[in-house]
Length: 84
Image 1: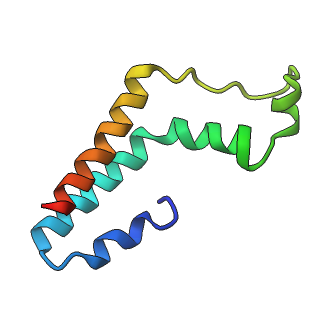
Image 2: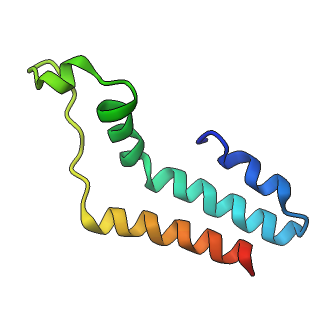
């Protein structure tokens, strides 16, 4: 799980909402893996081979607008549930 994400349900007293949010967070982590791969390659770890575009580097999947919109919608949905 992403750091910090797994603690969010600990602050929710309503068990039904807590379970719902935990499920939503698990789904969010699954659908946003492409974001983490990009973060790791481009920003966080500055993968040397990736940055030099060498032939022995593992290529990243293309991120589509639809995938990005799906991740953002999932995050918004979680925030909305918590707000209510």
